Image (cartoon, rainbow, N blue to C red; front, side, top):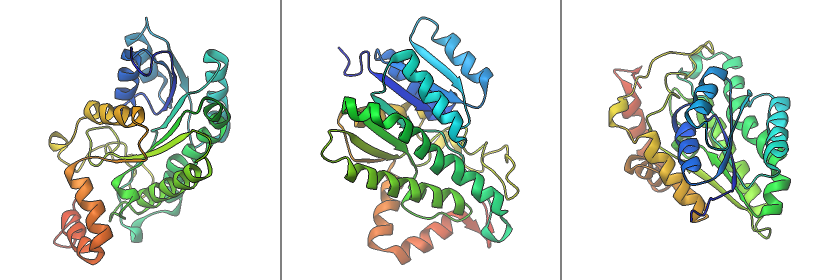
Length: 268
């Protein structure tokens, strides 16, 4: 029997990418799943795909505190509790600081950081009672600031720090708090990334075919949850970046600059 049989798993941002892959895999493992997203049509398609399985969908914007509260309230009304919360919803950005509107930074932070805080805060009493798990899907950008992604990097650093503080507070409760840095993964996050004006850029500057699939990433995350790991950093490039930044930060500056810039222009 699966370790997740009849567990209540809540996943934010479950209509695309890693979130959808997590929904699919947890349902196949016998979990009761709830997910939210802003696009009702995509959520409805997901529910139709799993019509015979226990899947709750809810339209919500995680940057909105009331939406998050109503979502978690609906989960409790439907399933009675929460065992695992995966804060997956997020948005990226691509613009240099000198060109970037302050409102764009604020929007990225509201979704990535505050969305994690809101959902975790409302679900936490149930997770503590069940000695469950809180997960934050963050990024390599949460370990190393990336050019052209200043707001994204800042928000993911904030999530990592906040979850680390929460983990330490809950050390004696039996709750596991884990954060995951997927590295470059095939998903919609780059297509939906915001430009300098806060509008969706609509295309990815990266070679998606060379990246880890969302399905493989989800499998790694689920395995780490079952093993109650503290952190998970995926892809060789991601691990290299994290360790280089710790051991040789100035050298990492140069390597990261070379990766993202060509002839002085941001290319990735």
